[in-house]
Image (tube, rainbow, N blue to C red; front, side, top):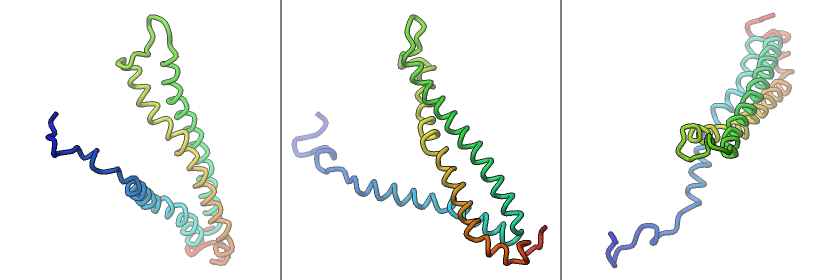
Length: 157
């Protein structure tokens, strides 16, 4: 043994501090959510105040269409990557790709690691973004209409 009788490994001396890990990851994730939140809140506000109601309508149409396309694409491609690993593991016969050292199997592990978060979190998160922008636009609709009869500061439209 590399340790003498008086020494103990660090694993034997201390219990892991799970709470500090949870607090650290929670704080960092909340910090990372500030920029997307500002984008969701400030985009319709700036668009409505400066360019008017018609511009907010265009922003919302573009947001909804692109979010639907992206969320469906992320969910489907994430599911395909995730299912590729299951397909390879079920393969039988002489040409089975199941061995843990084959390049195909290693690629399927990477695909599974990327596919699960893509289909489970990234795609559905766009739904929250769509709803947030729509709610902000509806809540401030009267404010947008009050700025130059809904034409905005720059009097567009």
